[in-house]
Length: 519
Image (tube, rainbow, N blue to C red; front, side, top):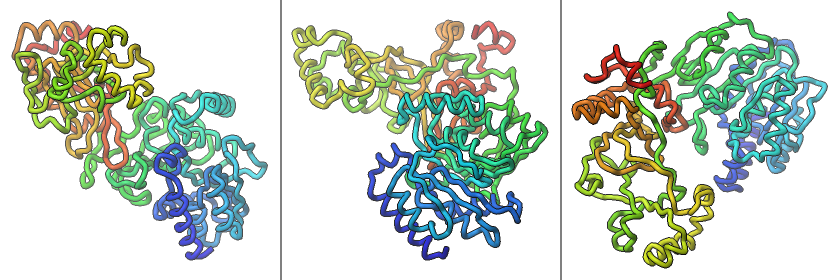
């Protein structure tokens, strides 16, 4: 192998990537591994293998061979006994054979997840498996893969798991004892519920060496909205006192944040990213231990997502436009614009309940059947006809609603939180909504629990106190409970928002009476 071959690989990679649209590549999970990243991972894992042991290499999704190329460049005097790569895309399989066949790589144009393990077990796996989301995996295939994981490892894997989870778990039966594996995967498995199968595998079935999470503000992939991690482990039963390196930021070999944690501690923790993390590009921080008895937002509020219309551009329109179209007001509800269009956090109320903002919006919501609409409300019928011509009723959400132009029921919430954001210092914003406006699902809605709601009716000052309390929640609490994607996109689900700690309860919510307030 020489540098000319690697340059040829990069050229082929670019051409094959351009041959398919971004949407097609997303559905297939085809995200090429950057050259520097492949080289970095190969350098890190090769010293974990005995120097005189011949390398038996396996890559379950070889692509054009970025990792095999990196292996050849970093192996020094090591011998490659055999090398096997699987590739489901015949275009990439042909390129990999052409480039690396002379260096001993055997390429199978086959779905790795359907292949049977070979007798010569691998002692080194370096892989970037396809990042295919669960809704692109057919129910039949999903059921078959779940059964194989259960049979091989005794692990139940969620139907919400991405395809990369099956790749990691089912590669286990190809590994020789003491084999080294390095996986470049989305870091989401460290926190989400459907990542539990991977976390169980890493703590109970293998000897986990290191998880390195790349800073999501420093994209490793130009075309994938994911935060990446490298998971390195040895196929060996772990000891409970074994220490694991959790690292964050910077390159794999020189991380900005490092912490050591035992396997037993990892088993007891459901969210791994907060064990070692960084708040900004320049400052690394560790999460403070949480107190089990501290008050959380879930103690005070019921949290729900905003309305999912299925077609915001059609169902949400300017109030002035709805008036011009003569859509009856009884079928319109005030709705706030997205957080990026709100410059203020306190939304006052007009006499008619609409928010006091420059550009008022309305949401179309109607439960009357089409026959009655056509007969009694011709202008609304005209607008529904426009929607039909645009194919709105055939959308996923609208096709599951009856009638298709009705919406989820949501009452106005006095407090709101933005659902996602990109700021490094404070990606989420709270809003005090004094109007009758509801919101779309770019917000989370906070409804005070019953006892607190009754106290709000008795005390106007308490509402201000609650908003001040929300505004004082620390940025690191958001980071600890939320999740982050490539490019620094932070996201917060309802259950995650409910776990945020509250440390400055307003007057009127006496700590000694907490339990009475939210039972």
